[in-house]
Image 1 (cartoon, rainbow, N blue to C red):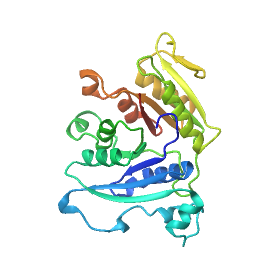
Image 2: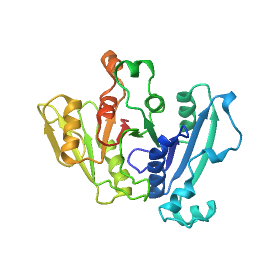
Image 3: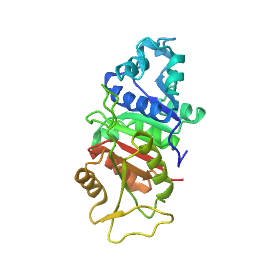
Length: 273
């Protein structure tokens, strides 16, 4: 729900080693918000295996490595101590996008944590990102991590480094609800996190509601956002988004998708109401 930290967190996983970074973020967020973490794997009917939970990321093993629980702690003991629950689900679907979307809708997922490939140009045309397509289908907030990127959670220790969050704002996407959501999310992980706002344009629009200082910069939107994120050492870029709008966005990707492909840190997409 916009304006509250996420409580139902869905991590679609392909069960690969590369997805471990996204799993660590999803797990640490679930602990911070005392939510429910859904580990979701989509398989075609002919691939489905029954009750093979060893294929999934090992929740208690990672929590023990982080020294949050004892190595032999039961699932019930984890829930009692940390206030977090875990669900492992394998769903049969011919379409990964539709399978993820149906699961998120059914379980009222209010955050997806996904690993995405850094595709561009012809490669992106030929093989659209399942992660990005699933987010467009569900309209749920989503945290994207790229395979070539280090996030704000240390996978070995569980330590959080989320000091600075950059949130670009523009007049066509009302930012207030997204700002509240991002602030609640960031402060659940680090109460001292700083949310910095940026508008790219010639003049600063007038926004409804109370927002902190908004930095004004001129230039091409995507390049300016990425440059400013590097300048301030952003640990996360939060993008209020309305998805793709028009033919040009369909051809080259939305602003959020283009920021995601070049971002020096993870990107959090927050659909506008």
